[in-house]
Image (spheres, rainbow, N blue to C red):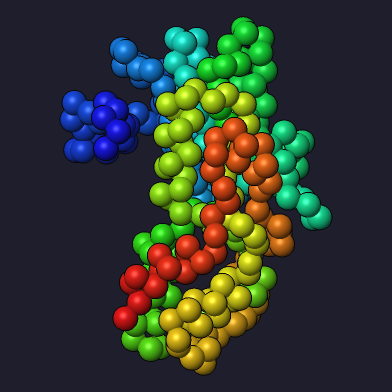
Length: 271
């Protein structure tokens, strides 16, 4: 819609075309960066926290070493890089982490995000190319097709009971809001650390109650429970998952996502 020529990557060779090229992050030695690339939005990784815990060797290779190598190659070619990181590089129990706060990663996934962040920052500083790097940390991106919310909506539309955890917190944002800030960053070449976050943290159970109330539906549809009651192991149960956005809001002119906006988005799919 903004008339950018976009080339994306895929590991699925059946989906390749002139605007979608092959890239497997576990094997990058033969990858050739296309000509005339102005900027790169780096999204690829092993995204499941459990998978990074269960197979750290592969995660270290894909999310760590090879990600770092490829970003290095891009920056050495004077290509601007927007690297998508995560709010879980922090573990703050009292205040929302600011854009330039120190990391406290706990899970392997978070540690590898932190590893890449710190090393590409060192590289760009060493070769005086800091203006070619943006690190964008995000909180929980949600939509009606993401779990567990798509399952909730199906159950609600059948007026059947569904479960939501009281000990799992998030600070929801939309993919649309994330896209907006990425486009601004790429267009203006904003460098440094930036955040996009929901307006506040809320546990899944309280959010589900708000969703039912927003749609004038009975709270009896909701079964509030703790994760251990469902034999689910949480890799993160921080009560603070949100991010401070003061610096980002001032520079990029984007504010935190309102919970009401998320409720409205989900309600569009509720009968």
